[in-house]
Amino acid sequence: MLQITNVEKTFNKGTINEKKALQNLNLTMNEGDFITVIGGNGAGKSTMLNMIAGVYPIDAGTITLDGVNISRWPEHKVAKYIGRVFQDPMRGTAAGMEIEENLALAYRRGKSRTLKWGVTSAEKELYHEKLKVLGLGLEDRMTSKVGLLSGGQRQALTLLMATLQQPKLLLLDEHTAALDPKTAKTVLELTEKIVEENHLTALMVTHNMKDAIRLGNRLIMMHEGHIIYDVAGEEKKNLQVADLLKKFEEASGGEFANDRMMLS
Amino acid sequence: MNAIFLAMPSAISQGVLWGIMVLGIFITYKILDIADLTVDGSFALGGCVCAMLIVQNGWNPWLALLMAAVAGMLAGAVTGILHTVFEIPAILAGILTQISLWSVNLKIMGQSNVPLLNSDTIFTGLVNAMGLKQSNAALIIGIVIAIILIVVLYWFFGTELGSALRATGNNIDMIRALGVNTKVMKVLALMLSNALVGLSGGLVCQSQKYADINMGTGAIVIGLAAIVIGDVLFGRLRSFGSKLTSAVLGSVVYFIIRAIVLQLGMDANYMKLLSAIIVALALSVPVVVQKVKAKKAYSAEGGAK
Ligand SMILES: Nc1ncnc2c1ncn2[C@@H]1O[C@H](COP(=O)(O)OP(=O)(O)O)[C@@H](O)[C@H]1O
Ligand SMILES: [Mg+2]
Image (cartoon, rainbow over all chains, first blue to last red; front, side):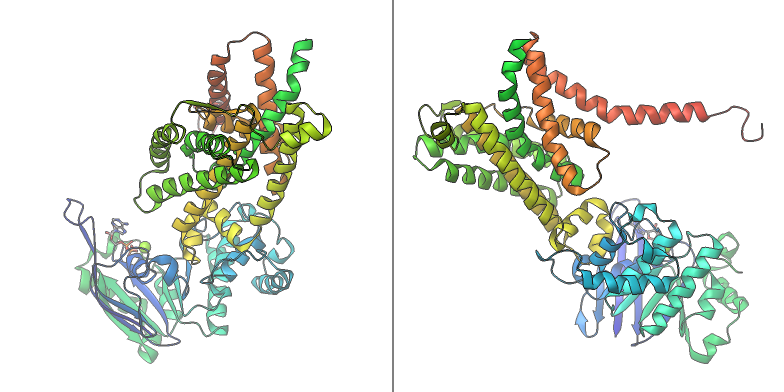
């Protein structure tokens, strides 16, 4: 369903800050795949997600989604098919707007914005139900400004917003990394639940190797802008953190000690 | 003292008519978080277009007013396109449009000042029918127009499109990721804003019975001062409708203050300085307060004392 072929991206081309962020990147995702993505700092994980989402144009290669070539589409156009949750909880929600207004904006992802009223009462009931499932009590605060919520609450809300309109592909970029361990756990559990219940196809970047092994049906490791390890099914289930470490060290020549990847 | 009271009706009516412009500035400055300097040019543009259509082409003053708004809208589109398509910083894009409008306005009028003389204005009917003074007629019509616009804006910013526009000012990354073309939103907001500014220019032109090439000079600062005054006086009101209303009321208070200082003998030329000081104070006070707080909270002993 998602096909990335020979994609390249270089930032600041032709300057001393030139940085090859993606090179020779290839990935085929099948319907219903839940892939976890690991790799060191600067491996190109976020860039890969940004390229899929059309945040920057790619330099070479093609990206197709369900057969449609989206390689050169701008972000707002790709957004019709893609739900995103970012690492920064501030980035996924509008602080100055109400919870229900945020949800209503997300409910219209990919639809043209008309002069119809922004939040209908039928929607409010839907939001109430959906918020209840989060178990954070947000369903009773639907007209509160999102700026009053905690980081974890905002991240849970962003997750709900990203999946309110069923996306073809859900992109999660270390979306629990900025949260305290307990909240991170809650948000991760919600992620599992939402992905499973809606049969979503998802790419999740994480720096937690145990989560990477435990969650999803497939795992990929990135290094220097491309995928160096791709494992699925039984083989993935039987992986140990030590196996991943070994793979990583083989690829990177033992830079691992400096990296912030979590082993726990 | 008496002179001050006598000056009030005209000050209040001016405040309401300029208040329409403040509604426009509210859209860019408060909702979109852009200081749009097109305003000085598009305000005068509205006045010039309105005056010429009435004096030279004998247009119905209401239609002339409508065209003033359309002209302002086009000016906003130019700034918007410079900013979004060509990625010129918003402030500079606004300055470019503003400066070029000065030449355009001069070209439209062919001279720097066009009096309406005995042409009918939108206020004439009310003056004749009820025997009202010009400034009272301007006040009544101004208030009716302001109320209509506040209601329309309140409705618009509650719609899907209006919500997307508010979100563009609030969190542009988010709303783009939700499929909204934020460039279109910005151009739209600048057009809407400058349409109101042009409309206000047309209204002021008709009420003072002339258009002048310099009538918009410093308009943005007046607008920002009015918003600041509205915020200070009515900032506790949270609803969107009351925020729009306080922008217009801020403008009224601004023109009342202006009338009072002028009556007290201050040179009218200092009014721009005064407006700039009001805005600078309003923007700097929160920053200074923050710094003082941080300084007070600092302790050399550290957290262990
Ligand atoms: N917008 C950008 N401008 C310049 N360089 C960038 C940009 N985004 C990412 N990079 C660079 O590309 C490389 C890959 O970054 P990224 O994809 O964020 O890595 P990861 O998410 O795997 O840690 C890094 O060297 C980073 O500095
Ligand atoms: Mg990253």
